[in-house]
Image (cartoon, rainbow, N blue to C red; front, side, top):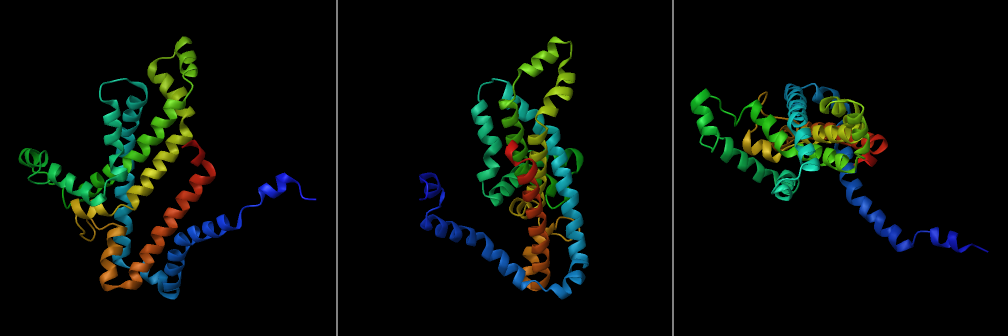
Length: 266
C-alpha cells in the first residue's frame, strides 16, 4: 500500500503538462536558433571583422561599465541599506527604475540629459568639447545606467540581512570603519557582491535599447554584439545567427555559474 507521503509527492499531471509547456516557451526559440546555425561556416563567421570589432567593443564597454558600477554602486547600496534619510524609498525606486523602464526610454533620457544640447551635455560640451552621444563612452554610460541596479540590489540586500554584531565586535576590538568594511563587511557579503558584479557585467554585455538610442551603431566605435546582430539581420542572416549564438552561450554560462555558486545569496 502506498503511503500518503508518496502519493502527495507525485506531481499532478496537469501541473507537469503546463510546466512542460512553460519550459517549451524558452526552449523552442533556442532550438530554432541552433537549427538555423551554419555550423560548418561558424569559425569563419566568428573571425570576421564585424564580429571581432563588436566582440572587442562589447568586452571593453561592459567591463568598464561594471567597474564604474562597482565604484559608485557599492557606496550607494551601503547608503540605502544603512542610512536613514528623507526620500530613501523614492531613491530606491529611482535606482531600480531601469529594471522596468523600456531601454529605449532610458536611452532617450540619457540623450536629453547628456546629449550635445542636453541638460548637462551642453554645458559640458561648451566647457570641454566632450561629446558623449555616438561615442564609446556613450556606450559605457548607457550600459552603466541599465546594468548598475543589479549590483545595487544585490549588495543592498546583503547589507540589510547582515548581522551587524560582527561589525560591532570588530569596532570594539579597535578596528576603524574602513578596516571593518574591508576585513569584515565585504568578505561577509562577498557572494552577493560577486553575483551582483557578474549580473551587472552580463546585463551590460547584452544591452541594446539604451545603447542604440544614445550611442548609435557605428562599427568599431559603438556597435556592440547586440547591435551587430540587429544590423546583420537585415543583410547577413548567418552572421546574425552566429553572433546570437555567442550571446546565448555567454548568458547561459553566467546564469548556470551563478545558479551553482552564488544565486542563493541574492
